[in-house]
Image 1 (cartoon, protein in one colour):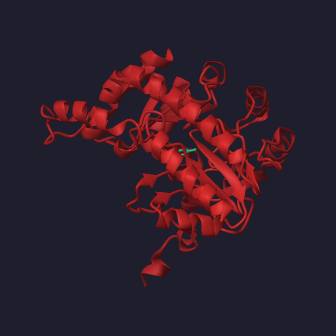
Image 2: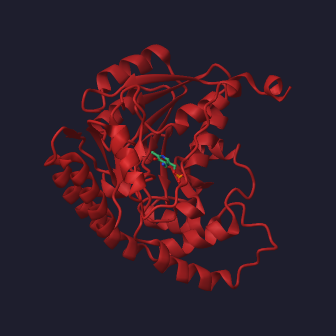
Length: 352
Ligand code: PMP
């Protein structure tokens, strides 16, 4: 009976289910493995004064204010979400009716397609090129023909790590008749943000998160920056109290300590380049260029390697044996020790 009652769009849905193994080195979800403990102490100190019996500030005013000041925009241009996942949901819920179209490049982050499917929307896909580069001409051709209501550009892209040149982003915006959502979950590792474009184009929304560079994935805090007009439109579907007071407090502490996060970001970028160089020296491997905090590579026996690493306590991401990511593995950049463990196990396996 329950199956029959489900929305038609949900009956065929494969849910997004992250794995939760206990491992020595968790390098599967692009988290920041450096930050946690130091922030924990400061968060615990402030938690002592938190009135947990009261609902949180529904507008997350303190954190939005801090972000607005950092980014040089008005507080009315920012929405705080329960992760940037929730911002994706808000955008889809605000703009997509049954049968409406969104346009994405593939492969990319799965949640655009999944959230759109739940809403009953149609997802149109333009494949990335042979080296997962953005195909701007083809993207614009499909966009002009199909007139999607929402376009998602992921920069840097997950899981490939590749980037979209700013000129291509501007061309997409100038040729679009819909909302252009630019997901910058990993932008702190690349530093060529499109936030400046929201002043010029009122249909552009940039998505950011504290989960990656700022090491706050457990607190679930993401945000959007857009024109006040677009922000007001998206806000119409935001549930009240969508970010808990514990999460708002964690975000405040995290932003107060952002100078320290900036040092760690530089360390992660250096480590990414070191791991990339080491991987490139192995045989039977193709390493994709990444500007994020992870590296995608294609390797012989990907599934066996993935399982071998789990058995040795290192969890990375495997994308199955079908589609454009067949044979690909993605490793998040962890601490130097975690990266060395991953590299050693991989080298030993390949040399076997
Ligand atoms: N966008 C991209 C491109 C991501 O990779 C992720 C997380 N994997 C998210 C959004 C969601 O991040 P969060 O909900 O933790 O902010």
